[in-house]
Every structure is written in structure tokens, then in C-alpha cells.
Length: 102
Image (cartoon, rainbow, N blue to C red; front, top):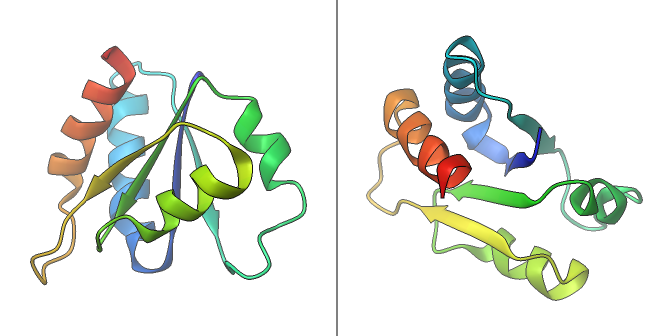
């Protein structure tokens, strides 16, 4: 895969469902989910460098993407939602498909 979806916390379920939908449709996409943010996993920088695109869906204004950009100098694309509702898998799959194609 050339695109990685990186998540943490409550985004695990919607990200997993969206990635499964895209894989079932024939897309090549990878997924990683962080269990802790401080410290970041030792190999995170190496993992991030393997991908052309990194997409980070967050239920906030993009704090994780900001940390990833600052620490690893990766052009991480944020997909944010701040409305008190969880991501819907279909909505997230559409956004990830656009990231793959774009």
C-alpha cells in the first residue's frame, strides 16, 4: 500500500470498517493504530516513512497530526470531525478513497 491510515483512541472501529470497505473494493491501503502517544512507539518514524501518504482521522482539530508532522516531518493529512458524533464508516471510506486518488 502507498497510503497509511493512522489512528488512535475511539477512531479504531470506524477506521477499521472503512479500511475493510476499501480493501473489499480492491484498494490497497494500510492501517495502524496507536495505543499510547507518549512516548510514541520506537519504530513509528520508520513505519511512516514507508508510505507516500499518511491520513489521520481524528475526532478533534488535528492534534495527533500536528504532533506527527512536528516529530517525524511527515506530510500527514488530517481528516477531522468535531461535532460530538463518531465517524461513520461510509463517510470515512469516502474521505480515504479521495486521499488515495488525490
